[in-house]
Length: 68
Image 1 (cartoon, rainbow, N blue to C red):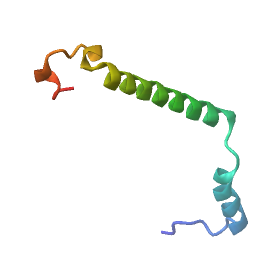
Image 2 (cartoon, rainbow, N blue to C red):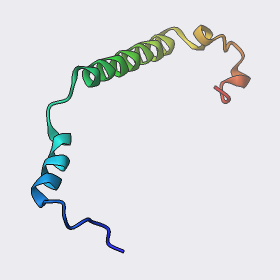
Image 3 (cartoon, one colour):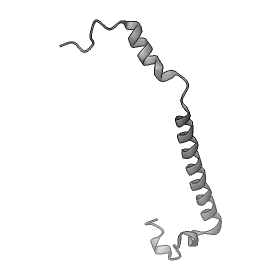
Image 4 (tube, helix red, strand yellow):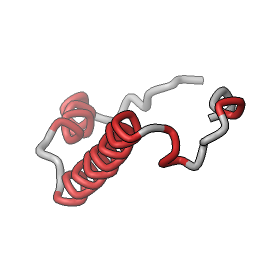
């Protein structure tokens, strides 16, 4: 049993592989922007918590910090 059909031209295979290297569509950039936005919000929350303290997360008891 062969893995590659021999009647397919190598040029078609090359075109199919190189399609993935074209410029990304708008949906890709929307997803990237959304992910960066969520990451920025999370980073901002962590910085705020480091500045203000663990009380922001309602962890006033030091015994539960290890679980957080």
